Image 1 (cartoon, helix red, strand yellow):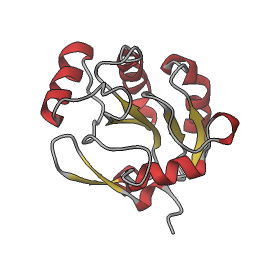
Image 2 (image 1 turned 135 degrees about the vertical axis):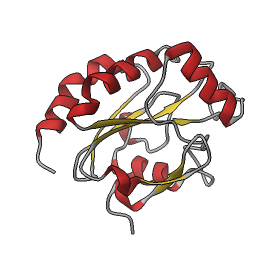
Image 3 (image 1 turned 60 degrees about the horizontal axis):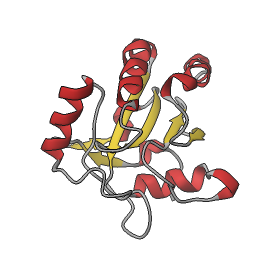
Length: 164
């Protein structure tokens, strides 16, 4: 049974296996992203958080998903290019995953059990759902698509100030 984010691994958008234990001791903001969504401009805010807080211990991890309205149909290479060209994304992007249902990535199965959504729902409702994970690898908070990245600064700063 998984007890922290460090028990998981993912594929980078370039296809390399990334043990999330590599991020041990860092605060993580894990986001399911899409390239053709009304919330896609949040990439700019996520990049700003990454640039502002990376040196203090924040890592933003983007997980593209095509589950909601088919809004990220491209290949991993196309998604990586889109994010870089349009939003200057330099934070780590992972390979496209499913975030709901039987085919959901194990990380997302765990995240949604650890932090439920509105009215206690477990499933992800849309793109750009965000999970803030503390230095101890435990989920601190879940945020919906409407929660803009800049609105998370207070929570991120508190997580960065907490001991590992």
